[in-house]
Image 1 (cartoon, rainbow, N blue to C red):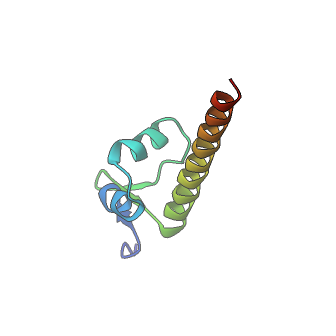
Image 2 (cartoon, rainbow, N blue to C red; image 1 turned 45 degrees about the vertical axis):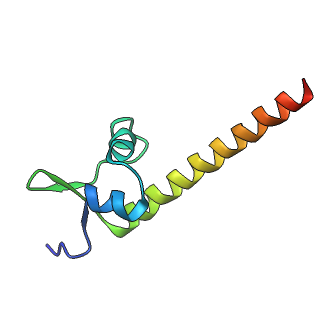
Length: 77
């Protein structure tokens, strides 16, 4: 098995600029599928990393939309 294109959890976090607990939360809540494990370490493929990036961007976008709605609601009152 070729492992040169696989990244460990810490490396994925660095690449995506997120804290490890964020990635672990996404795994534990089944938002993202569990990657393969080799020697007890989670190793992510490039396509899995890209999927995680999309999920994080969607969550960030949703959060931004929620903040805009809250701001508009406050302005109306």
